Image (tube, rainbow, N blue to C red; front, side, top):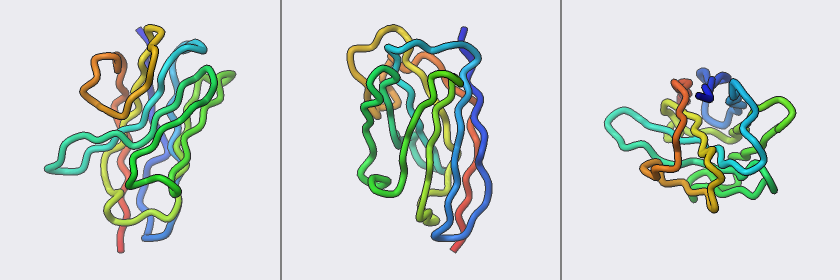
Amino acid sequence: QVQLLESGGGSVQTGGSLRLSCLASTYTGRSACMGWFRQAPGKEREGVAEIFTGDAATGYAASVKGRFTISRDNTKNTVYLQMNNLTPEDTAMYYCAAALKNPSFCTLDPSWTGWSNWGQGTQVSVSS
């Protein structure tokens, strides 16, 4: 069972930046989806960004496009989420997820059954 460990969360002011990391306990392969999701108090979990480990194709939620960048380093079994120009609306618990069974597509839908592995989350708080 692949375990995912997020890190890099913290508290910043509006306009600040953070870089989240998601370390997988084993090699996830070159045919996997890795995604970042977030959940604010009282709200449903939403997809933020996803990446296919093979060709590094990415997808973003409209709310973060142009501000967030997802990337991966297959040699380190790590996926990153660079978050710039943060706003209070970005405050949430951020989760990393993996789809490891040779998915034919990636999606930002957190209810997709392909997301088989989830991390415990890292908190991001943005103050005005």
